[in-house]
Length: 293
Ligand SMILES: O=c1[nH]c(=O)c2[nH]c(=O)[nH]c2[nH]1
Image (cartoon, rainbow, N blue to C red):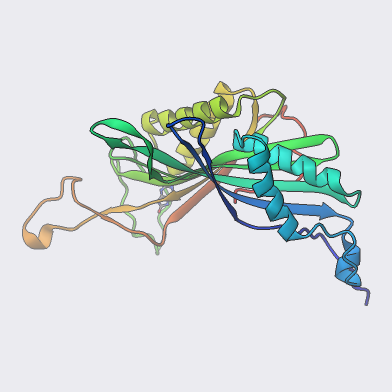
């Protein structure tokens, strides 16, 4: 029996980086979680413990902090590309670098209705994400959104599904539809305004969720991805993971009360999990494999 080393990568996971830009009384905050992964010719360290080709994960972490000081962090896609190009340029045996970044939002606290200069409150669960991969002089950028919770209180139906001996779910022509969006989109082409693109993709997805009359969460998922690809030519492919955050009508009949779609039990588990990819048939080469998380 022969045993060989299969695919492998290594790096520092979840480097927490907060920067304060203090170029006047109004401070600007960036709050990032950065993970690095390096790939290449790394057999020696696995097979013999020879670490000559191992750029230490501690050095990778320090590089993240040093880069944040040496130049403004800017958009997470640009910061990720700078780091990934640096890592692949350091040693011949490191041929591919992937840098994943989550950006956590902060809002300025309003004091007397005015945004404060240097006091902030966390914007909630939503995170902007990116994963950049650099191989030689090529780069692939997959950006996205995590934890964007949405709900519509009407405009959603679910019926026409098969019934067997285990089916209890009632058909409905009017239900709450709620989800927490995990979205990833793969960029193609060059010279992209990352912040503007993120803002527009987010807006298009939200507007579609709000306005598309839904016959299933699957239909809503496709419509959201299709709307992004229609509106944004820099996007080659969209992947969505949408938990169906069920809201069940509470039976109020024991209390002699009628429930006119007004009182719900918000279940946290189990939940339906609807996932899908929407892509152009003429999309550019997808590059190295990537997933939603
Ligand atoms: O939008 C939905 N899609 C399903 O596949 C499904 N299954 C289910 O029980 N409820 C729903 N809702």
